[in-house]
Image 1: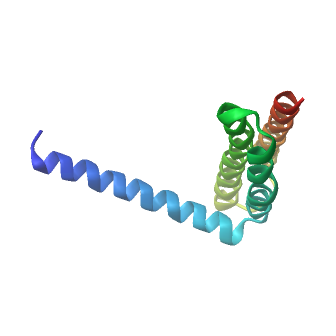
Image 2: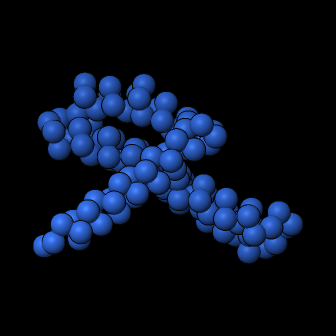
Length: 121
């Protein structure tokens, strides 16, 4: 592979990493739900998983289940931001989109709780 192709891939990778970090930074600075979920991750999930998780796979399942909650929260925020960008006037489809995003967060939390119960009990 020629050097130019490799540099191009590296540039794309760097750009993707930069935009990902910008998104995480935005969520940590401005999104209350994401801030709260990060706090739960740092104060409860990681220490609890390291203390009580049965082996590496158990710890990965415990931490990973909560990281999934955070991923879904980011997607929900993206949906809400997009809907608000389109217009702030009340529209049934806008409400439905936001409700569906919220339902996804709720289900991901139920999944995390289920994983914790299954792994620890």
